[in-house]
Length: 372
Image 1 (cartoon, rainbow, N blue to C red):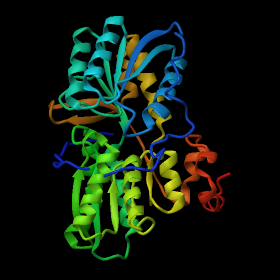
Image 2: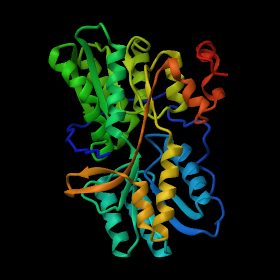
Image 3: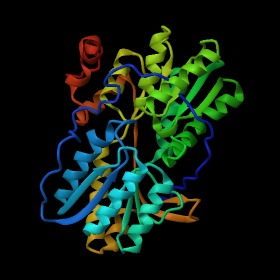
């Protein structure tokens, strides 16, 4: 299957205050705060994750799942987090390259930073896998992610579903970082569903605003400013992930609008799922990160052996990099829309424990959804 993803400029800047504690907790998939497991004696692979502030997934899900998958594949992973610092990202890469890693896996903070790191690795003959985020204009050999336009389309679909029958419903879009190609793809996917509705007048777009660095606090502040400038009127909010959704819900609660406004999300975090069960968030997107980690480990193991035939047989799709004028061999996994009706899908898969989302205020909803 050949999927072409083209980048579209999002434009703008943002701001809101997030006071809800734990609004970014991941759930029970593992703790990124633990020190890495001792060397397994396998082939050394470097992995750099982007940050911890905007989404709990990187340390809560990706880190332990990548570690487990890579060790199972006979690799010795060195997994570090750049904590949103481009210089630290570059320094970590330099250290890994110098230490002799055979493969470098990067989930970059920005395409420019990721591309620079990939170029340095390539100069040393080290294959690079773009993990989760494609670096536009880069030279990475492979890309593993979810179908991110599909993620956005599911967000648009969820919002349209929630606002069905509300002719002219007013929508505010709080998007991800303009430097993150995934944020562009999410937006593109959303617009395949929402733009025709805006054009027909079925929905009314109040404003669309990307949030630098996926900063939840800035996202909340920005949403509040847009909301108040619109006279406190809003029917639906496209929030690009669960962290931004949590910030939006905090503001809606402040104005007595929580539960009355449809809010989207992404990542199926414990807090996002709890908000869905409370009725404060309408939907999220579940991305089985273990599948992403497993595919990355399989690719890395092949590349570490110089087995490009196996790597190519794993990465059977392609994604267009319009900035680099190239096609990148890819593995694109399938996301799933989650509403109150099917939250159980996430707990059944073991990504979040029932005990983390079934608290006093959501217990009735958990029981109704068959979550135990």
